[in-house]
Length: 204
Image 1 (cartoon, rainbow, N blue to C red):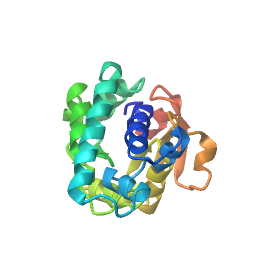
Image 2 (cartoon, rainbow, N blue to C red; image 1 turned 45 degrees about the vertical axis):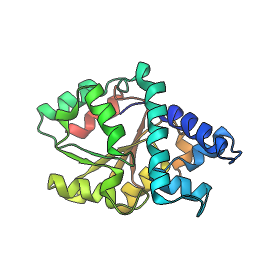
Image 3 (cartoon, helix red, strand yellow; image 1 turned 180 degrees about the vertical axis):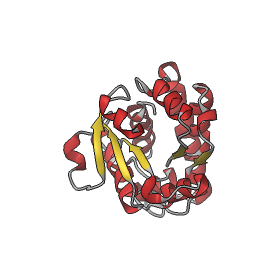
């Protein structure tokens, strides 16, 4: 929905290295999946309590939001895409590894909450992507069969989660190249933004 991954990576890079991780930006990028607490546990196994990880998670998101707020905007074409889908009665949900604090930042900052009757955040699932729980929960809340869902993803672990849920996926190449998704068989198309004419076939 938004092209903000670089800002997440930069925020984590600063926090993790301040804690002594000594990671490059590319190494941090590879770790940016799943819940914030899980990321911290992968880098610093057993070092922090759950309360400490929750506190660092909020501090990281505050740093991310402060840096990204001036650039907050939808990926090109998404505003028209959402309106067209809504006009056609397409049910839409958000299934994110982000905490609700960040989801609210985007939905309310861009005034698009009304498009999404179902929102599944990191706090609402037990197992993070690539486990399919997030997307299965979205479909259940919308009352849609899993095989009838189309997931929009920008990360390999997210595409894997969709594949594990038995769902097709449209990949937005804002942060990853096509060759990084070669192992997945559920991809219907790759797009750079929502102005891509390939998306017109989704409404037929």
